[in-house]
Figure 1 (cartoon, rainbow, N blue to C red):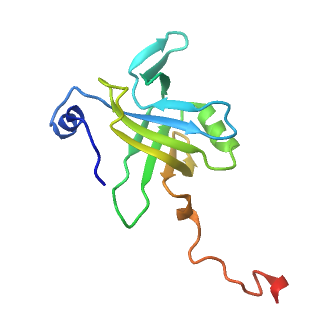
Figure 2 (cartoon, rainbow, N blue to C red):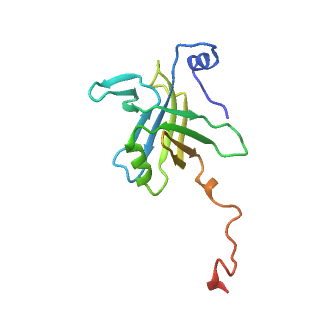
Figure 3 (cartoon, one colour):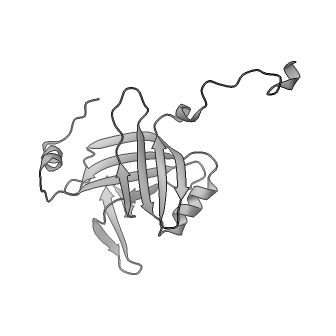
Length: 167
């Protein structure tokens, strides 16, 4: 899969040292949420002193800074794209949100540069919350592109044990 990346992003990606900062922006949506949740991997600018809050402004939205690491998916034809997020377990609202929803949330992942936060270099729309492991120090989340990946294969069999009313 080819992507149209800006020369600035390519130079930063292939440089041995660079002043550019790659930022991951997350947009979390779910029918149970009153509004989308916007998160950023980088404390681009301070927006509040009390309490101390950092955010990244991109395309009119304020993405709140929450420290997390992310692993981009491979472009493999034989497997569905999978992104892994490891978020510091410092914000109890995130854990409460993860425990409160019963269906997978939709998460959009966007990669931007700190010098050009309005220009999206890489976008992974429509990822679904897959597996979430809540630990003492971190929350590990798998995002999958196709929820059918979670379905068992082969499907269920019509046996007397599974479907006694048929026999």
